[in-house]
Image 1: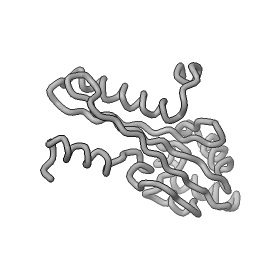
Image 2: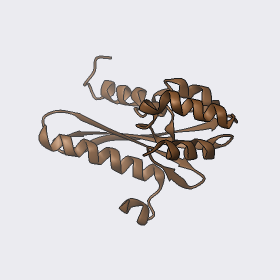
Image 3: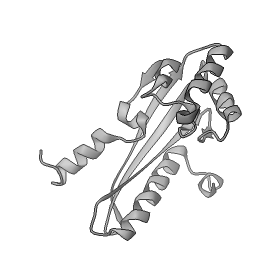
Image 4: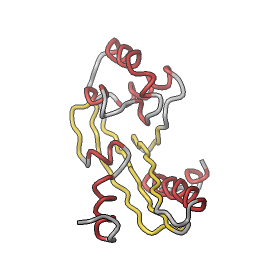
Length: 161
């Protein structure tokens, strides 16, 4: 990832990825407001991606268990192929300690879903059971800082308030 090589922070990477997604669609539909979102999981200075295999999911969850990590959830709104609003929310999550047997069973039950999620968990599903503490906006943790987006759309006149 070029941004990592340039020394960009996880926060800035999530913002750049969200902007890239929004701009790509906004160029095709310039008269529409387009929302792009992305999320980065940071643990001890390392960025974790979506697991590509069951083994990778197991390694990620084993590394996160008993520890805190941070999610950076970015949203960028583009109009006329230009960013007009952006927000990056952060949340800190502490994963509880759990047995290897639970870890393996969790992955077995949830692989089809968690393979599409950074950190190999989805808080809105069984993944919530992995945590002992969560500090931050729920929607940002899900990858869409919805309250911030709605606030902007309200103040900009796009939504009735």
